[in-house]
Amino acid sequence: EPEVTQTPSHQVTQMGQEVILRCVPISNHLYFYWYRQILGQKVEFLVSFYNNEISEKSEIFDDQFSVERPDGSNFTLKIRSTKLEDSAMYFCATGQGQIQPQHFGDGTRLSIL
Amino acid sequence: AQKVTQAQTEISVVEKEDVTLDCVYETRDTTYYLFWYKQPPSGELVFLIRRNSFDEQNEISGRYSWNFQKSTSSFNFTITASQVVDSAVYFCALRKTYSGGGADGLTFGKGTHLIIQP
Image 1 (cartoon, each protein chain N blue to C red):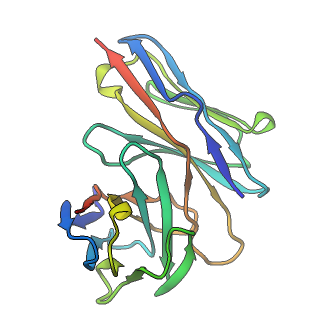
Image 2 (spheres, rainbow over the protein chains, first blue to last red):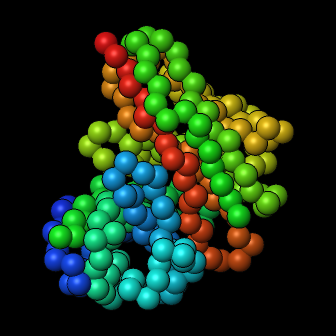
């Protein structure tokens, strides 16, 4: 079964550094999402992306965050200047259509020191 | 604003018992979708079911069943004859339905940690 692939599985970064998380969507999926889950807490929506632009974003997704799909395959989340509170598991999800279920990758654990 | 409440933080049962996980939601939208996801100890999120707001039929898939009641804004999940492998955190989620072409994020509940003891 096709999978959403996320790299790296674990990223350790110094506070203030930029980090890029990568996601390879399922090949025929058109809708892309980023979520985060702080340890022990619920999964929170960050941003959705469709037709090469942001479709919706949450309050968490401030100016420090950006997304792009630079080469038509990878879907990336960039955090410009990381903070301690950015430490979390970041999940990429993709969907075939607007109303189709979102399928999640295994996540990237981001640890900010 | 949308909200999903999973009041049960943790449930512990002995293997082979039936267990029901509660989910109550709030939304102003007349059409929406409800989901359940499973998060095993390995951490990934596994899609279990999607239900749209027009379809109040209960659904059964093997040992899993879902009871959607629009009148009480609930979408409960029952595992029959539980097994140790069912141990996981289960999340209920809600998504509104856009009339346009946008992509909608899911609103998750806080999750219920289900422990199945042998």
